[in-house]
Image (cartoon, rainbow, N blue to C red; front, side, top):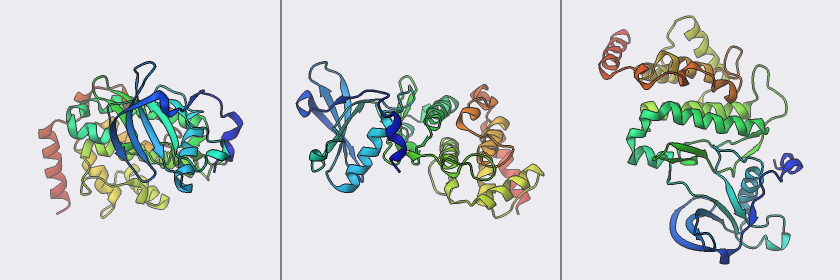
Length: 304
């Protein structure tokens, strides 16, 4: 899946990583493919995040995809790569791969747990995520792993950046039937998941991942909604009803537009979604608690 990247790989020039240039300050975390540390550049005193991938084949290729993608994706809403190992040097394939990235205070998952007040900025945060995604798609790439843990945020100024491009690959070259291709569409559905995460929380009873639904199931749900109907027993219907209690009419419309993005009549890209009126309105347009309670009570009566 990497063949697509080599044509214009030198876009954002990152320096070559040298271990002696950095001082380790702390461990930030670990994952399937490697570890993340907080480091200080000795020469400048700047603080960065250092990702270290073991020299195993899976770790190497994961790191390689991330490096190649980040060299093409310099953007204010994408984490900046400062330096990296020489991934083209075959003699170094038995050594760990290092990537030095700009440091951000935390990811979205941790931020919402520690700073729940940032939910007041849901529109601003989602808009920034869509900006980053629009840039990724403009480069004919897809992220393929958008989730709260892969969205970095500074709660002090609400600056948001997409990270972790180890699963990044080329978007499909041809569109599939109606609308955008399947790979781009999965990224769009991930934004819908994030929207649900903001408004409904992370519990499995409140949050339904759209990745589990078939295109046919989504089309059936949309056709029902366009006719003003209800689709009993549908996970999408339940998700829609839950959102109906906490988000504005424009928010519900954005939800429908995004899940319809591969179907005629919906948003066809992240860039197009940025212009949706949901992002121009204030938080006060979302329903207050008493209205949410009343709506939920009416829904329960209807489904008894």
